[in-house]
Length: 132
Image 1 (spheres, one colour):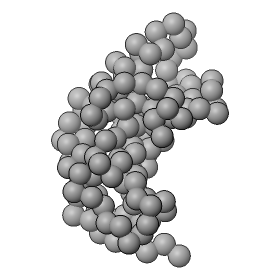
Image 2: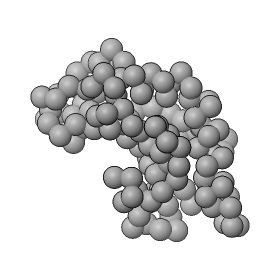
Image 3: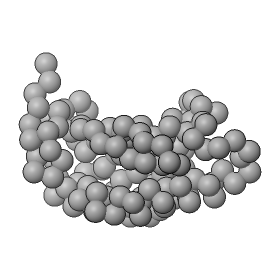
Image 4: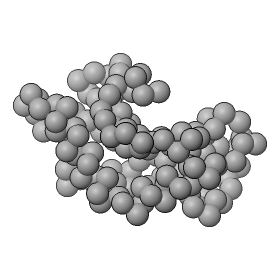
C-alpha cells in the first residue's frame, strides 16, 4: 500500500521508485497530465533540496520551459512532416537527486526509446536511453 506524504514544494507525493505527484503542462496548444518524479532509490530517502529548487524553478518558469521544449523538439524533428503532437506524448518530468531534470515523451514512431528533453543544467533533446 502506498503511503502518501506532503512535501512543502511538491505537495502530496507517493513513493514508487521515487517520489511521485502529478501536474499539467501545455504543449502545442494541448493540455497533458504528466507525472512528476523526484528520483530516489529508497523510500526513507527524502526529496533533496536540489530537487525542490529545480521543481520551484520549473513551476515559476513553466511557460518559458514549455516554449523551450516546443522549440527544441521542432529543431530535433525538423524533417518530420507530421505535427509533433501526433506522435509525441509527454509522460513525466524526471528530477534527479542532484536537481538535473528532463521531460520524457513517448514516441509513437520509436516505441522502444522515447524522447527526453533535458531542461537543466543543459537544454537538449536525446533518447530516453541516453538520458536515463
